[in-house]
Length: 150
Image (tube, helix red, strand yellow):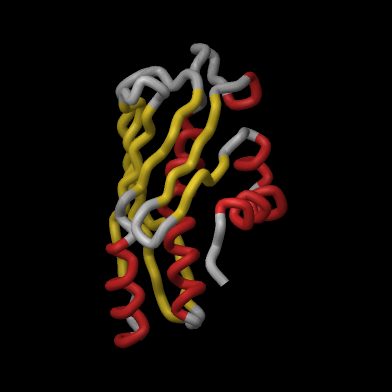
C-alpha cells in the first residue's frame, strides 16, 4: 500500500507529535518528489519573529525521509533508515508559509538495491529546499541517510 500525504500526516500525529503540533505537513509525494509545508506561527517562532531553524529542519527532513520510508515499504524487506549527517544553509528569514521540495527520490532505489544485494549499509545525500510564498529560497537542508538490511 502506497504512502499518501494523509497517512504520513496521521503518522506524524502519533509518532512525531512535535512535527505535527508545529504545523509540519506532507503536501504531496511521488516516486521522485516530496513536498512538505509549514507556516510561521507563534508555536514555531524564534525570538527574531521568524520560523525557528529546527522546525524548518523537521519539514526538510520529512520531505526526504517520507520517500525513503515509502520505498523501503515497497521493497518488502526489513531495512533500517537513519540520518547520519546533515547540513543547513539559511538565506532569508522564514515567514509565512514555507514549502520544502525534495526531488532526489531516484537516489533511493539504487541504495536499496545495493543494501539488499550486499547486506552492507549504503548512504545517500538528499537535498530539500525551503521556499517562501514569493518563491525565494529561505533555507537549504542536506541529509545523509544510511540504509541497511536488518
